[in-house]
Length: 148
Image (tube, rainbow, N blue to C red):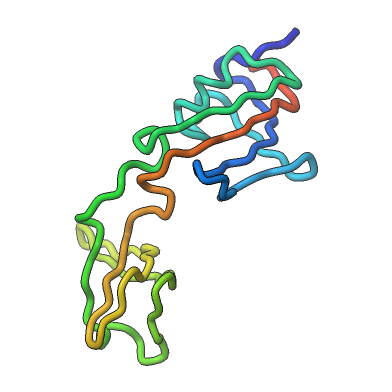
């Protein structure tokens, strides 16, 4: 029986959930996830959990925030004046904006979630939406292609 090893190409069906059961991402047999062990296509702790699994095996993996999208960082909250937004935008809590950030002379567009709306300002959060959450990943191995 083939078992997953480093550099193998692995086809998976998975469901990613928060601890409260909310599904944040999943795949199915018609659209499986295909990864190569060692390429860090998934977090390192998920790759390590896959090592030794065989076709047809199922496993549930629990990721702490440090193993997933990191802890929530307060320094990634920013207060902006509403007049810095385009006139067409009426910000609301939960809205995701694409904001321009300059770093080292290069302009980047980053997603930011509106977390607070006041009369003249808004507070946006640059943390990944899954930051700070424990994640549950249910995995079924569909196929393994051995590294050559």
